[in-house]
Length: 369
Image (cartoon, rainbow, N blue to C red; front, side, top):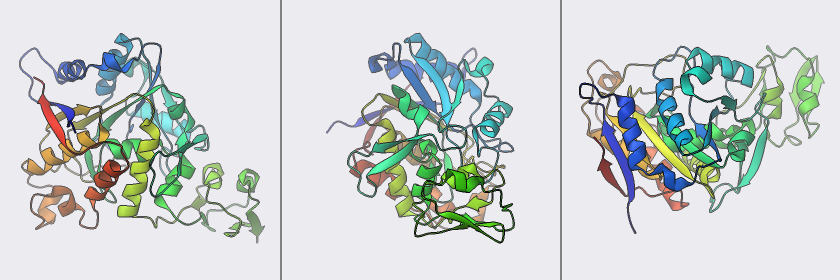
């Protein structure tokens, strides 16, 4: 079987050139015109960065991608879905403010920002997963599924639970609605923080299973009735309803890969990993640790599995930076992500993705100057 092509350009720029020009040449080499984007809505899935974190991608990268899609007649928009955990991106209003604070405006990116799963993270579509082994369906943000094509623009970095975060994680975990993220992260049910609960009963109004009652003016969830949809989590304005993060490691990686498959199956997709400021943790943190390797470059492919594999190999071959978290993690050899997060198994993410037909790890690297 033919290997997937992964296009690569490094961070070096001669006088008069720029990294954005080089990204443009990568997109030209990849022949985006063959995707048939004319008059098609194109979702560009990315992570806007939690405010306080400075490792997220600059909006300049998205502007280059947007302009290229428009040159083929496409109608792009930037998108992400809300979070389960407490932060600045738990509902659409806060999420858009966070995106704007980090520079994502129509004036800087050339297109609109749409939060994929609606105001409270409950606007989703149940999508059958072709070839799913762990899950049969995925709950994906409606705006993402309404698009005719999907691009992922990814800051490649480490992740404490999945080993690394690239195209698969951005597509899979990032496109899930609140209920979808719960299905990936948690095999249990929502839990009530009694200290934060005000007994306002808003959550009960959103529970289609009548699983929420009140005792001593505090919400109580009947686990026999609860189906784990997560709508109560989205409805609470006081962060009094959360989840037990009990699905980790291989199980999480497999579910995440299947969600990524649900997002891209049956429509054109393209995937870009920017391997710069490779921080050890996710951009969901409101801080970022020092980069663990020097900036490497940009990888891009029609195949999300291949682009992640190429990025992993490049990172593991790179020199490490003194003074980073790597100095605190002795041993582990050249497998940098396992060395940083020894409890994770990044291989299971790629292996399962390949097994269900999301893409192939085998690839051919094409260098673009």
